[in-house]
Image (cartoon, rainbow, N blue to C red; front, side, top):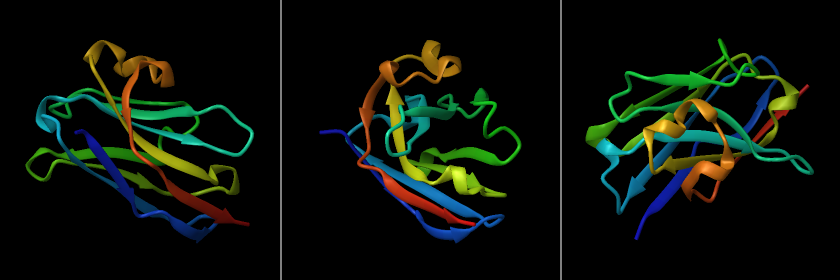
Length: 126
């Protein structure tokens, strides 16, 4: 059974930072392309960043490029997202996700996701 468990969310002031983690089990993590998404109330789920199994290929949405950094530790079956220079509009539930194919990486589309975590809430105060 595939499980993705996010952590690291919380309340932070604008301009602050957070580091999200996603611990996985039940899959061959080292061979799995991964991604982060977020969803604010009343909005569609938005793709933020994706990373290939080796970390050699990384993609970012324009909205977070230069401020968010994705990484992974295959030895620990874990995915990370460093959130810097946070803005109030970043307030949302953040999800980690798996893709079944590296061909989906650059698209950052929710419809391509195979498995979802349960999410971790990020709230940025102004």
